[in-house]
Image (cartoon, one colour):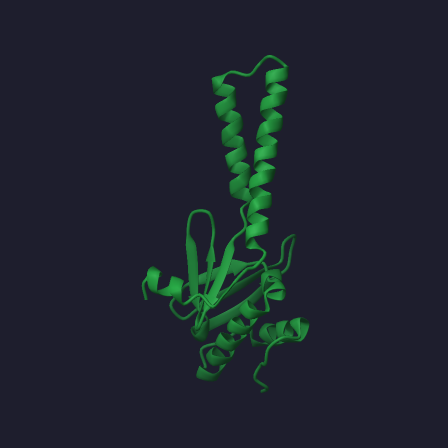
Length: 167
């Protein structure tokens, strides 16, 4: 499948992404403006320092930029500022939840592809969750989902959306 084909097959996306991306951009711009004004006010602003402050603001934006999560029948994509990663949800091998400072959900497929994202994206976007859950169910039925079915069931119970297989 080519990228153009899959772009047409997007059935669900993170509805909060645009707002989060705007917040990241406006926060970075505000920090840049504050740094430039403070440096100008102290009399130390020159071209070199302005470039450095701009680079710092760009780095801040890169850190704050939220990943864009999209899904279609049998696939899920997580795109960052530089690249996009995809997994086949109908060929999952594992589903893992990593708890820590920021909780992450890690999906791996039989082709060695891996995506990692915040599971709150699924909680706030039922259409995404339904597509991931349907793919996980197909993976379990076909026998490829070796690790993580318990986590899929826990998410189904937590979100209260979507069927899961009973086993």
